[in-house]
Figure 1 (cartoon, rainbow, N blue to C red):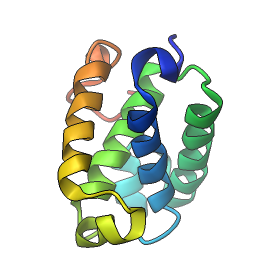
Figure 2: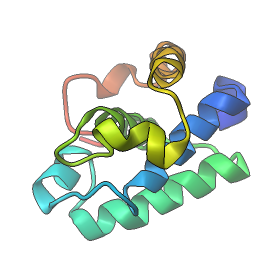
Figure 3: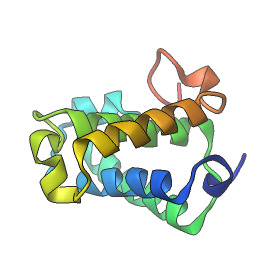
Figure 4: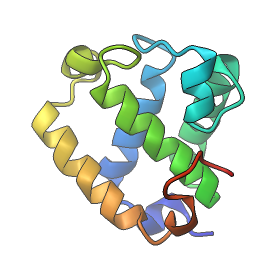
Length: 125
């Protein structure tokens, strides 16, 4: 399993870390959304996002399932106004929407090979 720094540049890793942190702030998830994102429930989502963020910060390898959880949690928290940061994203993160989309697309492309077995399902299954 490669380290985050072997796959993503510093800004891309920071985007994921910032997005994962949104789940403990303005974003709110019920158990069903947390489950869809690959976590057991809403409490596990908060714990898991903290763990994933720490692994990104410490440059620790992540499993394909954890990469899928981190990416999907980022995509949802950025785009959804119902459960994520949505229209408040730029206010709460300081990240411009256009820049976020550009970096998110880059992350998606770079993680493609790592996520090969994760497409179309719930992360980790």
